[in-house]
Length: 99
Image (cartoon, rainbow, N blue to C red):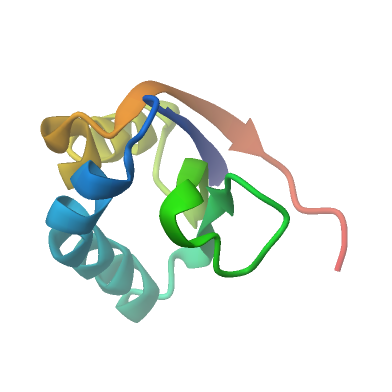
């Protein structure tokens, strides 16, 4: 089943993000290579693809997992969690309707 992992950043998270980004991306690339990643990306803090020093306010990952528990465990092990980037993370089942 698909699950949405919705993360909210702590204030001024950009330096923390930069530090943990390579490890964070490696985990997403592994999901992609397994054919389980549907969508992933950050929420820019301003209305721009490249928010510069404004940074980001959170992230969204939609991926396939065996269960809600597996999705939660994957989210809990994100390097951004260890680095203190995220203030909160919500994991929910997701049903694709379109496209």
